[in-house]
Amino acid sequence: MHRFILAAAVLTAAVTAASAAAAPRSATYAQQLAQAHDATAKYVDGLGRAKADGYQILTKMIPDMGYHCINPAVKAFDIRKPPILVYEHQGKAWRLGALEWVFPQKPAAPPIPGAQYGTFGAACHYKDGTVVFADDQVKCAATAPGTNAKLNFWHGPLITMHLWLWYPNPLGVFSGVNPLARPFNQG
Image 1: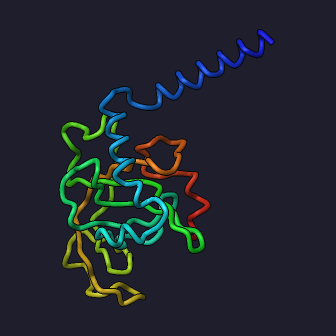
Image 2 (image 1 turned 90 degrees about the vertical axis):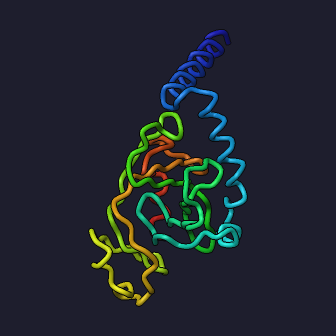
């Protein structure tokens, strides 16, 4: 019995140490995650509330990420108001997986301790979620190829920051992709 208790204590210590090493340690980090969690809980189980609050389709399924919905009214970094919500979709169910912020350049100081960044190329975005990469806005067609959806907007190259707050990610909370989202790639 003592060996079992000792083994359990060692295992618990190892898991705790590994978790601590994988995540930034600070009250600010924990406070920011709690603020983001509380503010976005209303969007977890579907798109209805997100749409009512101004979010609209930004991309169709991006493999190992999900469908991105943007709120064009959100302009600056606010942990409580992410401009992009990333949803996993299966059948009729939509479930919030990650939050995302984009920047025209890498922030001088990370807005969340330990933040990691990705990139997203210059692109034309269409009203149905079609994305066509183009290095200049003049290269955007008025309608999406194959769907005839109207052009929504173009942007130059962006720095991205994902926060996998609502779906576990073995690659880390800031990873751009999530292998556990792969079963949802087919929608």
